[in-house]
Length: 402
Image: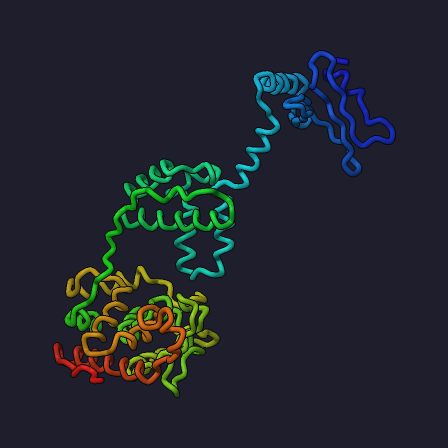
């Protein structure tokens, strides 16, 4: 029987059968399949062939979507590929497997796995670099195991040209971390980012504000959210996300302490910080919003979010009285200037909630002191130093003596 529109119209499922294939007499392997699915009978075109000692069957398409001659033409192409030594069905399966482990699919799995462990800001930036079409979008459809060093290098060059060296460097870091995770999951055998040239990150990492810059910045901080946050950053040496997300439930005004929970800390360690009186005065002056635990921001659960606009407003108020600076420079400035007035390094580490240096390795295992009194004295000394600068210019405070 030759399969055509007239002959297939008469074909039905035999009694007692749920699946049958009627093969064409003219083109060996070309078939019309009827299969029961619930109350319906589905019709489709198939191509059956034998390769490497195995019988394979490839689906051509639905009989409702493809006419007889269209299906026959497709069957001829598949059988021609078999005659040339290929295995169309195995190639199709390999293509599905490749799609399952495409860079885009692995990125989705990675982000799902890391959502709980990354800070919200870090998660947003990582997601931007890994999912944005302007970054590694051209590689999204490629199987992760097939991405080469040349592929990565080409994308990094394009990213650097379009967005600058800082963005290129950070995008490279995000992709390298993804591949390191994929290696551990057994999804690839190598990290193609390794060996690519790292775009120079021009972001300064040693910026410390001078005393005159501290004074200028303090004086332009108004009684708005960004002004209060910057003052608290200068007085406490904590991270901007930690201060920007500060909550009333974390603050004990009677004890004069702020307890940062592990969930909001970068190193996932709870941190109790004695607050100097200047910081407590700033906090006490903040109006409390009914039903809102966060000190800053209006609606966002993470507190203050308008970092770009706030920083820009401060720069406009400064009017050139300070050089280029970032909010994170305030943390470095506070740590450096505390050292300048005599605060010991291990106390500064305790204030910063760092577990390197004096609290790393064996020393950290045996020395479990939180240095509460020492931190309180150090931050009080630092606050008085800031007060003296702001009120009297370059007035100095005597260093803390051992």
